Length: 72
Image (tube, rainbow, N blue to C red; front, side, top):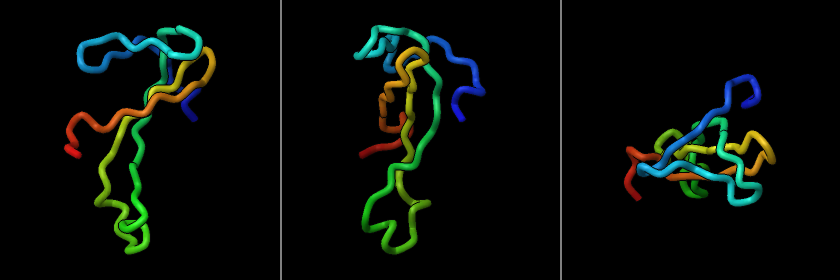
């Protein structure tokens, strides 16, 4: 669970993140698989790209970002 890690300020593309819901500036970070229907159907989910989730420490709003090392 994300609450076991320490939340802190996070940055994307050189900008500090701020929660669009409550304005809080501390987040937990998790990596997540961005599954597609076709790859799931073929049982090839491991090929799908990964993204990052930033979870607001205050209101628990989740912001998703495509992985920095992935290309669409």
